[in-house]
Image (cartoon, rainbow, N blue to C red; front, side, top):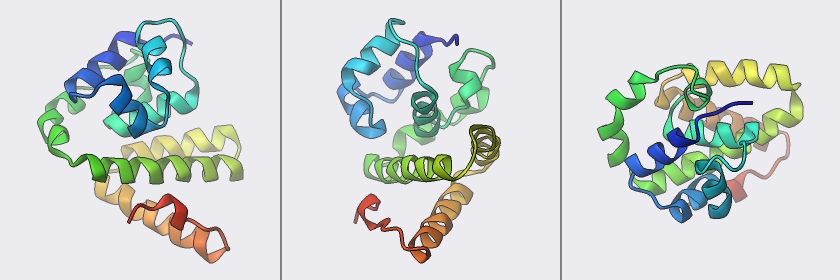
Length: 148
C-alpha cells in the first residue's frame, strides 16, 4: 500500500487542528497520527476511512491516486462546520462502518462505502439515521453512540 503522508498533515493543518485534536475527532492516537504524517507507518483501511470521512475526501485522494479539487473548492465551508457537529457525525460514521463490516464481506463493504462517499452530506446523515433506527429495531443499543 502506498499513500501520501504529506496529505494527511496538510489536511489537518488546513483545518487548524493539532494532532491531539484530530485524534479525538477520528479515534486514533496522536502518536499514531504523527507516525502516519511522517511516513513511519502505513495506515490501515479503517484509518484511511476515518480520515476520508472526517475531511470529506476520497480514499483515492489520500492514496495520491487522484486530485480532489472538489475538496479544495469547499474548504472554507468545511472550516466553518462546528466541531461538535463533526464529532457527532464522525462517531455515527465509525459505528455504522463497524456494524456494516460485521454484517458484510470486505468486498461488499468497500462497494457500499464507495456509494456512500458519493452521497451529499444531508443524504449521508439521513442514511445514518435510518441505519440507527434499524439497528434499534433489531435490539441494538445505539444510544451510547449518540451525543446528546
